[in-house]
Length: 421
Image (cartoon, rainbow, N blue to C red):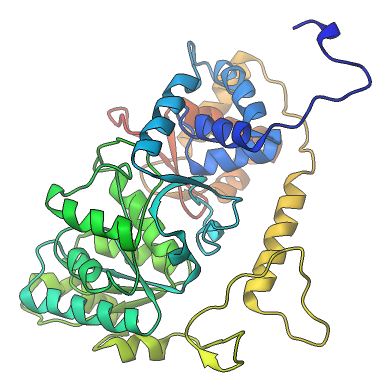
């Protein structure tokens, strides 16, 4: 495009809303761009389109040849699939994006949603547990979900067999959210197809994955962090020593959510995880009353009475009334606005490095990493690197597929045989 194509007196028009979310979706679907990298690229480059323009150059600087961003045709196909499934796109900066989820360092930049978005405005409790749940386990899940729904909570789970299925069925009339590991339009397991259709009509289905994506093993831990992020508390009904439910519980602990567990018989392997959680400090749950009693009461804006339901988050443009104590939600909203404002501050220019210097820097970082998670800020201090050198190098290594980011600011070195991502 020549210089004459733009008037010297009129700046280029800002992107339309549709252009913005299309570019965001395209950036997120580009190779090696996960949620953490997405948010950092957006903060550094100001817009998704600017980040898309910069990605190939960044990949070349990292020694990658032939790097291509996600083609527009792939995003168009995904959007068409979403329209066919009646799915809507929630951007992380949209009004109906769950405020609790936005607190995650690895918050999903975009979510596909099928159903009633109003369920996201209510207080949420997650009920998770074993796929091979016992009769007592499924009965307990049904009882908890039914009574919590009656008390005004939306029940969140993962649409798996066993405990998840029981929780969704029992809360279908009062409000339930199913978070999927695959695309919103790919139901897994297939035996829950009818249940998923009912949830789409009466509740809400959420997924951060592309439409029509069949879930892979690596997608379920990602799904679990969303379940934990949405909920005020996570209740584990039954869980073996190594299970996805315990991953959800750990995510909840990392996020400062309340973790609760239903005790079981010591000889039952399905009770091992729950009993271990209780031993380590989780709230013991016998019924919904135990759950409600463990949650902090929230004032009701309408009546001034105490309720477990959290009031809707105020808009940023409406300051707190004088003489009134600010709510936690208002403070978080103001903090979010401040963070967005700071994100607009230009970052120092990236240090220029030769190919030899880049290779040496990459090797230094990789040598400091192993399969066990390492805090990124601690690694930077240990290697005595500046943020201007360290941060871009991490992005380059992630684009090369040599490191993985973990929620909480942690890094791991990827194995050569790991093709995920």
